[in-house]
Image 1 (cartoon, rainbow, N blue to C red):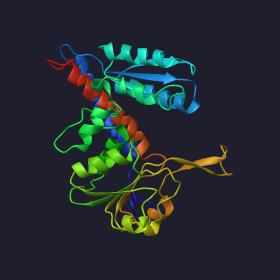
Image 2 (cartoon, helix red, strand yellow):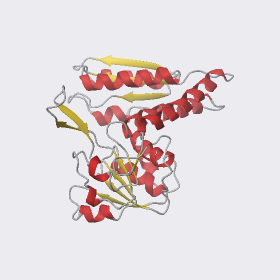
Image 3 (cartoon, helix red, strand yellow):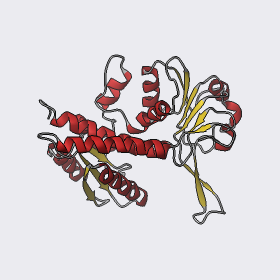
Image 4 (tube, one colour):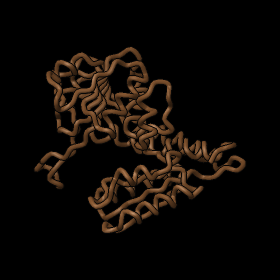
Length: 301
C-alpha cells in the first residue's frame, strides 16, 4: 500500500496476521502430533497498571486465537520480591509452560534484573536473558530466542521484500530492548550498521547515508524528511503520546519518525500505530511455538 508521497506503507497488522496464521497452523500440528500438546505461555503481572493490564489482555487474546494456552499470575503491587521469584520458579518447572513473560515495569521495590534472570533460558521467549543476548551479539552463535521487537523489525523488512545484505543501516537508539539487539541482527544479516544515540554528533548526515533506518529513541517525530535517503526503508519503533485537542482522549500516538515528511521520501515505511507493535506480539507467539516444538521433540525438556 502506497504512502502519501509514494512510499510503500508496511502494514504491520496485515503482516502480523500472516505470522499469527502460520503460528496457529504450527500449534494445531503440534497438538495433533503423537505426544504433542498445545504450546503454553505464562504471563506474570505485578500491580494494577492499566497499560500493563491492556497489554496482558491483548497477549492472552492473541494466544487464544493462535491455539496457545495461556497461564497467568496476577500479584498485588506490594508483593514481595521473593513471591514473584517463587511464581517464576513455579512456571519454570511447569511442563505445560513453554514461555514466561514478566510484564514490565515492575514496582520499584523489586529487582527487575534478578526477576528476569530467574526465568529459565529455555523459556525466555522475550529473549532478554544475558545468555541469549550474549549469543546474539557473537558471530557464529545462535540465541535460543531473539527479542520480539527486534525480530519483528527484520520480519517486516523481509516480508516487504527489502534487501538487507550489503546495505547500510542506521539504528537510532542503543537500548537493551531494541537498539542494541536490532543492530546485532542487522549485522548478522551482513548489513553495515551504525548506531547513533544522544551523544552522537551530526545525526542527520549519518542517517542520510542509510538504506535502512530503524528509529527507536523515544522522541516524537525526531526523524525528518530531509534526513532520509530517497528510497530508504524506515522502521519506526517509537510510540509517543502528543497533545491533540481534536481527539476525545486529548492526545494521539506518533512514532519517532515524522511520518508525513518521511513518507514522501522513503521507499518503505511503517506507520504508528499499526507497524512494529502488531509484529512484536506475533514474534512472541512464534517464539513460544518454537519453544514448545523444542520441548516435545525427542530429547527435549
